[in-house]
Length: 94
Image (cartoon, rainbow, N blue to C red; front, side, top):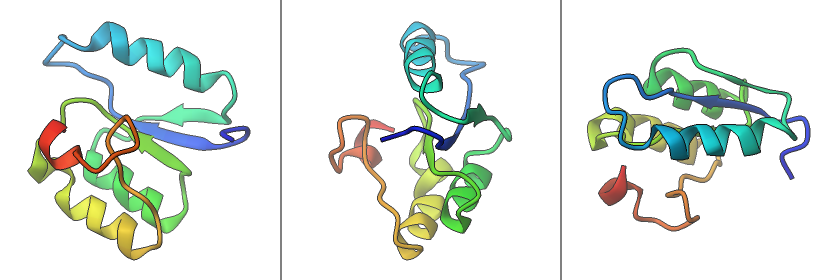
């Protein structure tokens, strides 16, 4: 349940291939949440998630170096990191 959850994200600005899908996800997610924040850095998004400042984070098209350290922070804090389908292919799919 995402009711009241505060989410973080990164809005695509260079690679526009997934922009329609991205905004479709945002439209769906924003309805039941407390809002979406965009600090501008995936590393910061993951750090805030690990620290409990946000309840979730998603972004499309990240490179491994964009999220490897942050994913470790989240896992070490007891969180879960998945791909968009809930699987474990996030290092392959970004």
